Image 1: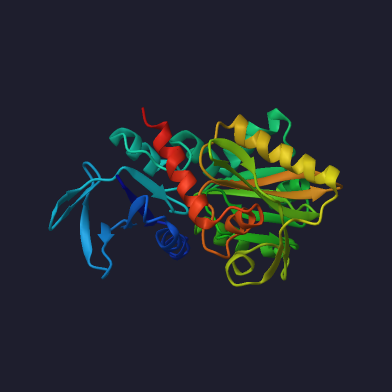
Image 2: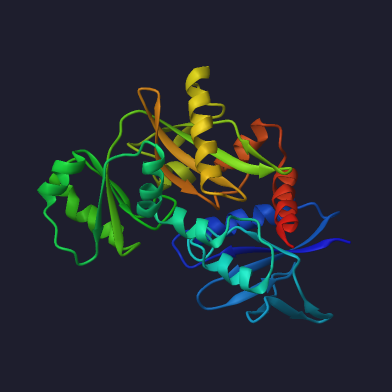
Amino acid sequence: MKKNVAIVMGGFSSEYDISINSGNVVYKWLDRAKYSPYRIIITREKWVMLDQENKEYEVNRHDFSVQTASGPLHFDCVFNAIHGTPGEDGLLQAYLDLLDIPYTSCGAYQAALTFNKRDLLSVLKPRGVHCATSYLLDRGQAYDPQAIFDKVGLPCFVKANRAGSSFGVSLVKDPSQFETALEAAFREDEEVLIESALSGTEVSVGVIRYQGEVRVLPITEIIPDGEFFDYHAKYEGKSREITPARLAPKVRKIVEETARFIYESLKMQGYSRSEFILVKDTPYFLEMNTTPGLTELSILPQQAQEAGISLKDLFGSAIEAALDKKP
């Protein structure tokens, strides 16, 4: 019997439109011989299911069901395609755990941890993972810009601590740019992370569970047209993305082992995409995305294609892994 799969998309953050694109690609490619897919749009104002004519049906949040003309519709699995809150920070996962509904992404704790850049770095650094020097600043906290520059140096990155798709990220090369960068970051979050700007090759590494096993996908080398891999580089074609990355075999092995170590030590499930800067062939960890972009042109699907994994198989394997976790 085919499984009813709710593809949740949208969310509460600036990544709403990106999530809609990802969710629609999942909807397009899911194997109709195995699954009956349904699009669920989640916003702060409403939770609705869209039928093929885009007619809206309200989602009952008490049990995550939908009342249709033929009766109540319940879902066997949720495919999480929400970037940012509530799909990438653990809120949705905790809700689905309470309802005992399987889902494709990592668990609530892992999502909350990886979405908080500061907390993730504090967990990984003691485990031997190289990271940039950083400084945390909360909204309303007194600060001395020179003391921050003395610690992290210039240039530095000013980042919203809990945001994705490079929203709220600025490269500061001169002290005069600092206040504007802080304002941009605080528009996205109450916490700001200020990090040393590392100089080196940027790479992105997808690690997934595929057919029951942890698998490191081919590495992507990122060459932005601008000064860093910002929103325009990610979504408007303002970068070159080379898969597989042009790395020496020894360096490739180190990056793959580091990405696998992070995935396994955090007890991850589902997809992940970790970003690194290679400084003299040593990978420095930047961040992890646990609901990465899933369009045909997104990095993780590119890596899967290079590994010989179709989108149909990539998405289907995530659903089967989620269903296998259900007692």
